[in-house]
Amino acid sequence: MSIFLYIAVMAITTYLVRMIPFTVFRKQIKSRFIKSVLFYLPYAVLTAMTIPAIFYSTGNMMTAVAGTVVAIIMAYFNLPLIVVAVSASAAALIAHFILLYIG
Image (cartoon, rainbow, N blue to C red; front, top):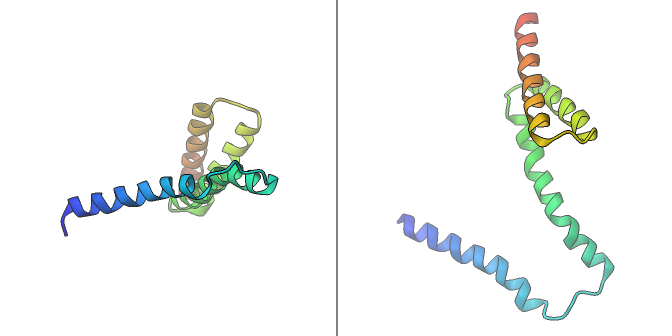
């Protein structure tokens, strides 16, 4: 198949996903439940995509858990994102070296 066909199918799919809500929901949404679902949906999708990537990124569950714990603790104290990311990466690397030394 041609790459242009793949690009065209993805463009149409992306367009339909964005266009359908505008055509279906012409009136303002008044339901508090639907509004809350639509408000939290991006956070839920982002979490569902990120969490598996975190735990399978290092190849070792223990190093991933070490990095995640450090990231959660540092994020709790409202540290900048770059500090949290670098610290979590360093914690995963240190945990990897500790596991290599032990085993």
